Length: 386
Image 1 (cartoon, rainbow, N blue to C red):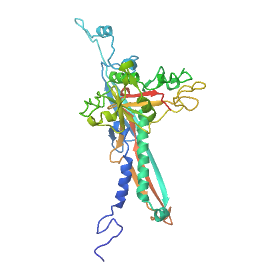
Image 2: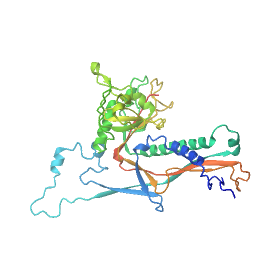
Image 3: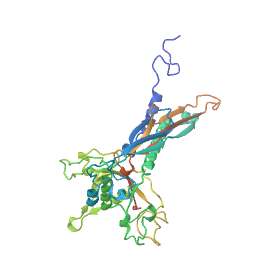
Image 4: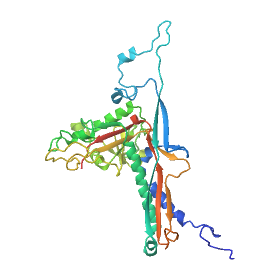
């Protein structure tokens, strides 16, 4: 027998073929190409053989307002406390005091369940025979990009499930966003994103003890660079970004643009993926895949001539998401890859492929997401220009 043999390309005396790994790397690279939402998720893991449900618990501080307290929604944990209430609430002890001023500890538990997702592409051997393209690489890249989008969408949808919600204008729900607007569009700005709305969002997050994502950007020696305060991050769609770019503050000779494009401070800062600019204590990330609550706003006025996006009957609602540190996590299974790719060549003959003409590529993954601290994961729903 010859010393140098090819065999099946794997058990070869001259070394294993690497082309398959090259194909797989193309898919894996595509599957991690975009990380706009995933970059804000903490990572948790769960061992195998422990069921599909992941649970995590935390204790609430005794001295805090309870999240169900009527004042929490507007005042957060400790801010804006009435000095009289604080004074009268001090745990004084009388001489010979017995078992008084008792406190209790509250523990809360959150849980999520794993779900499996996957898609496939099938093809015939003639694609490989006649195609001028490297279809093996292209199929894996396309599936990888699709898997990447599915993971990003799952994280986005889970984050948008937060119960900590604000609305632009005087709205109290999606259905009231745009209610009462003039038909000529002269009042549209009342429901768009605004400088004051961002300030109120920042105030709410501070009251809820959310940690800012970045440190102060002190600028650089380059001309026209800007200093940026410690900031939260907010994810917006292109429609909201369009409105952000035109926002101003002040009036008369003191009026200035409130929004600072990222290129004016990028030289002195580490930009997050997708970061496009800053305003007040918030730095903005643009997501082309940001979802829209299409047609879930108020009814548009009769003969509406404004510029707000709508479906012809109702206004479209656009969420602005603030994913602060520690507010959300994805859960992985120990020992399992984030995404698993599978393939079968048409040349593999078996009962289901008797002529050796059919092949496929597929991917699948397990996913579970969990909101860890809902009060620190804020969503603002606004109307936006079409």
